[in-house]
Length: 229
Ligand SMILES: N[C@@H](CCC(=O)N[C@@H](CS)C(=O)NCC(=O)O)C(=O)O
Image (cartoon, rainbow, N blue to C red; front, side, top):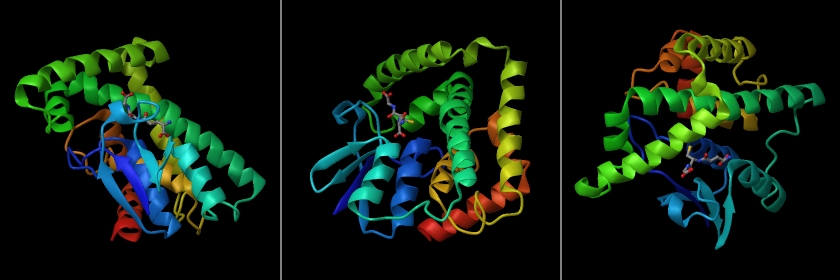
């Protein structure tokens, strides 16, 4: 049985982590039976979640989870895509996971520390919650500083965010899925990002920008229904 080790739902989302939602979306798209289990990053092989547990074999990272599902379980996510579509999907995946992700993390952790503390660490004993939050917050702040993104002015960061959101909305256009009329693995990445913004209870610049694009909102609602009922 496949089991996705993940984070608990919070702040109105299936999971606060877009990667955890992406991992679950890949499993839902695969049609294989799976379960999810709330886990702890400290127990994860690379200190991050999600991790796929396939009968005791642990596969960290959604890129490797996708490869595992393709190679071991013969799931075909992307073979209908042309070489050009694959190239576009790769570029957009990097935009979503290696740029947009960090901007979204900044808006959450820098603007809503209290809500993040009480949402992310709801299961931690109340006395420890503040300490855990402080340690994680320090690491996240450092990580965002190292990417260089949080060194820009707020105005510059929001302009970059707007560029990302507009690029996503333009590529989607009035198509059913991100690459056309058939779902592919890039939809899992985009769904993960949108899940962290559209139903999320936090008011963030990226959330507002996404919600201003009716096609992104309708897409999120459609995939939510199709993948998770
Ligand atoms: N490239 C990884 C990224 C996973 C990731 O960054 N997970 C974050 C949550 S969004 C995490 O577990 N962070 C815990 C930590 O770094 O301590 C994937 O695709 O699965």
